[in-house]
Image (cartoon, rainbow, N blue to C red):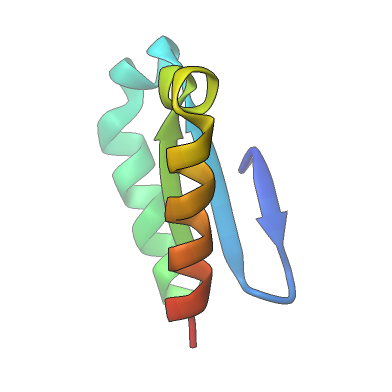
Amino acid sequence: MPDFYCLALRLCIEIAGHSHDETVEYDRHREIDMENLHITTIRYTNDDVILHSDAVRDDLSATILLLP
């Protein structure tokens, strides 16, 4: 289940902690499934969100502008 999902933008946002280190393969398969549904997935680490929130916001804003 995604951490955040915006139906209007078909955008899935994942905030990955250390537990995601062990699920890289599973996450990749799930991302392919999302792509097949025309859903864009974007990932950030917990550290990025906590320590670099301005950069995450800017990246997310730029990503949204590029969505179809």
